[in-house]
Image (cartoon, rainbow, N blue to C red):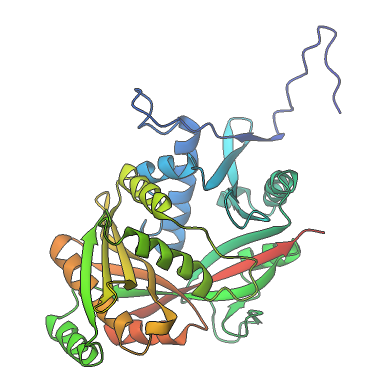
Amino acid sequence: MDKPDPAGVPPLPPRDALVIAAVVIPPGGSGPDAARPSADLRTCQAMREAEDMAVWGNLDRCLTDKEALEYWRGNRYEERHLFLARIGNEPVGLCSVTLPLRDNTATAGIDVLVVPGRRRRGIGRALLRHAESVARTRGRSSLAAFHEIPLEVPAGGARMLAAKSGAGQLPMDHAAGGFAMAAGYQLEQVERSSRLALPVSESLLARLEAEGLAHAEHYTLTAWDDHCPETLVAGYARLRVRMSEDAPTAGMDWQREDWDAARVREDESTLGRGGVKSSVAGAVHRHTGELVAYTVLTWRPEVPEPLIQQDTLVAAEQRGHRLGMLVKAANLRRAQEKWPSARSVLTWNASENQHMLAINTALGFKPAGYEGEWQKRLG
């Protein structure tokens, strides 16, 4: 350890030293800086954008500045920390740690990115150690990390690593996967990303809806934009809980999430402050008035061409009535009407979720890539 000089001031680090510092996120509110990302946050955003452009050729998956600012502020349900790494004045990478606060409090989300020109020099390992140290200090024992690769990356003859779920695999020679394995992470699950070209033809939507309605005489379709009606919000919260329980998670240490009406409202407010518009379609059981299915699409004016397909869920006891197809078809129709600039929909599904994959295939979704979900348990 360097000693301070006689005046008690520690010496400056060497010019080639790696320095990892927390990114200061402007607080919310109505002050002059509330809506502006800090310089360091914008630097991290620029890294993300450059990486997405290099891998995907677009920013469809990338947060906008407004979304990023709102996201990294965190909330009472999840604490989020972002760190920027520099060598001298040069930004060379970032890492982040997300910490659930109400549920899943033994887990942490970990992410690491190094700029291309500085890779394979130990910077990624240093960033990962930093992020893991933050998680360990906060008492977390299970770390989760993700990375997505385009469909064309696994070339013929590539050595493949099967997910522990038994469904899906990733190329062993991909840099991100090799980095994760070397750090002690295991591939628990593989999700398929899919893209649907828009617009979907009216004839296809009409046919799929007609086929579905023949099996759903006891249900009524409903829909809303951005803000769930008061009459449905309690039922919507219950379905959000069930989404956390029913979605396939393989061996990931994810447990039931605690949703109530207040959490729904905070989620809606967060999306709104981040400039995100949402369209929700649902199904209500006619005899009970209970919301039993829902699906969510989101759209961002700053990135107008892609829609993002968020959750889709049908309550387990209501399945077998084509409700998944009905709510997705209905939401696609209304989204196309509201956001005519949209040209595609992106979605992600666990490789083992064959039922939802079949619905997406019938709507016209095509595979676009694969996402590895990695986990490391701390001793």
